[in-house]
Length: 637
Image 1 (cartoon, rainbow, N blue to C red):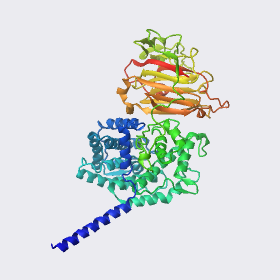
Image 2: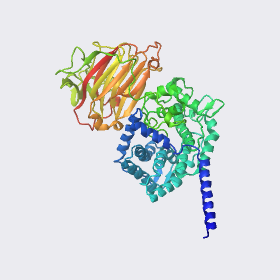
Image 3: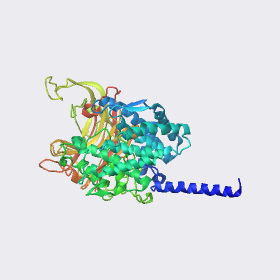
């Protein structure tokens, strides 16, 4: 080859490289990286290094989730066969759970690896990705494509986080690409023309697959579909046209549509810099729909499409929706209302069922650059007004024998919630500086037994368990203050410990109830109850999965629960981690009196219940079981 020929070849190759470079530049104007672009990951890694909250607490939650996945085996299915939910609920949930468990395991491990660098997490994430790529050949039945779309997003995010990692063998990654094209994206694209939440989830799933596969043509088809019917979905007042048709579940389905729609908008932004979050037509916008969701989630009685719609104010098996969605969107819109709502749940993790905004506290969004990301609320507890509290009452339990009768009275017999235990004085005592409430499996005849009575307290001939409950009613009450309890709880099946308060006036629930600490069925709860508009109890409840908090090892340790209660509101904590926070204005009884039951003195209770309406079955639990309390202290200004 002569020198002129060489020069020509070099010039040709240089031009070719420039063409490729500019094609890439024109194709991707965003910050790249799908759901988790590099600037976001770098920002979070720095926050963790600096031990800044709420990122540190959120990261620790992620690690617990990832650690729990390390011992799991794959649940990959050759045929991802999902019958319709309303036709076969059990079959639908069983096979869905297999996919969901492996997907969230892969996602949590992949993200833990990218943030912390430990190779064990990458290895386990790849284990799940490779297993499904090798085993799963198809999807089938009515909901196969939909569930694969809203649950399989975890696989795509995990794959995108790991696609450049050398630990992923080329042959294995090529097999995963084939599965993504032929099974996962095929399932998503088969329903992406639907105009409801199914279409939203399938487009989001397809977009993530496109990012992983670097398929710009299909990516743009999804973008076009989203933009085409965006304002057919969202009405000018913010309601989601197709989702409100679900009536009682309409608010839930509004969330279920907005979660993937907003996640798709984020992916579109990271890839192209096109901002759908600010687009508006005739007053309709994504922001208007989010505001609508927040308002009617908090004011369900005003919703015109159905009476008593499902909201997050009652327990649902899917988790803290729409807190996960609004936490993510708080990084886009910076709304004070979003912040007030989300601060109750922070740090938010949503590891069940549907996966758009799974780690929103840990992985914040920004349209202006991650160096400017600021969280207005931190996980550490805020001050009430100042820290000039004075100790006004304390119970240190530094004596032996029965609880001090000047401070406590006993509850006796059957009390509430159709619980299994008979309360008696013998089951409570103080030793080694602790109060012991002990539940035992032992028979106790019911002296009030009437065989044909309709009253559960009277128609039980005997109790199979005994336990103890003590309270300060008639001895000590408090209006406002800081309440602290250090204790240790048993988290086995059927055990139901609680530290709580009741107002001194009215009939429950008009008295008001604050559950500073409550535990049952693998959930640690922090609840506030009052009278609802239907004359029944209404609840503001939050819960934490005990396994995500550390499970058995966590329960072996003492922990500190706290309530801060003043004229403005109530905040509940465990180990300085905010669990629940409500403004006083939201806690007015919805009866004719419109009394706020939390503007009156309350007394406190400590009990250890067994079974009943909420406690679960103790059949497989060995007894005795204990609730141990080191101290209780009350401070006021």
